[in-house]
Length: 286
Image 1 (cartoon, rainbow, N blue to C red):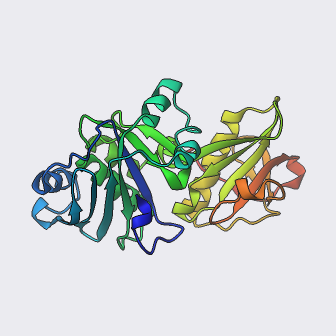
Image 2: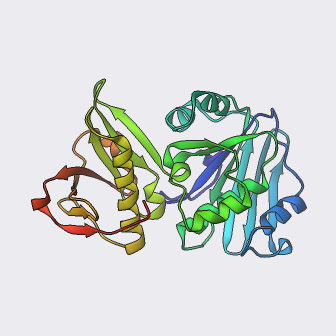
């Protein structure tokens, strides 16, 4: 698992690939290189290098290098620890049968990005390219531990789909939206995984009269505002939502700190009267 990889920083992206097979069934290196090299804007397969210190049916440890990407690979013929599954698969947004299938995996391969590319989106795409190269009919899906989420394989590893992630970030795959209940009708909704993109996580307290989908749309728009504009947002700032009379105010996390606080910090958002207008949020991507 990922603990075999040394020198992991808090903004290191990683994926766990989970399989139904009872042992590791890695294809040959040439095929892995060919599948990575098939992507647009990727170096030819002869420039893609794989090295293994362990390559067995029960465990593997190796490395994939292409361009300025480096992916550490480690696998075990056993499921992920229950604590990881509870924090990722269990709280992911998929149907119960999909989550049950993911939980019933028998083996896993962990991919940890240790390359030098400066763009976090390209780092994530490199992980998905490697996941595509290591996929087979036994692959059930991916577990994104830093983002507290997971998703089925489906067509998310299709090369034509992966290339779209440059223009439209797949929030459903790369960001977790996790509920922390305070009672039956009230809960905190918090993002997980923003730190991979050097963006603070966001949280909002939601009651019966609030629309969770609207809050998630606000989360996405705020993410784009901070990420695309390299904007600095701190507690006390307010943002006017363009095209509406809504104003959001940012504040510090004051409760459930252990659950809500992300590795790069977390800001709480709440609606305030338009008279408290501050900075203006202008995005059209969310």
